[in-house]
Length: 91
Image 1 (tube, rainbow, N blue to C red):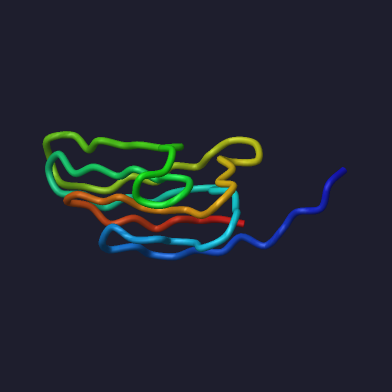
Image 2 (spheres, rainbow, N blue to C red; image 1 turned 180 degrees about the vertical axis):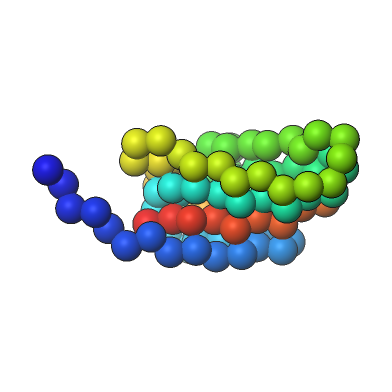
């Protein structure tokens, strides 16, 4: 059995690096305007997209729990946001 590690959270309100080191995303909370988008990338603004979400045509929010060990980001976690904010839960 493996040991559980601490889970941290950070809110990102504009496109920017959320976590500047390798980490696993365990969950995400997205608040969005109509049609807002979120992409989490590994390796900065031009990095590999590991997660993306396009909001429906109505403002709202969504909580996403990722199964298992989550999504690994080997370099960093960059959040690309349009009409949305995101809270990233990572460890």
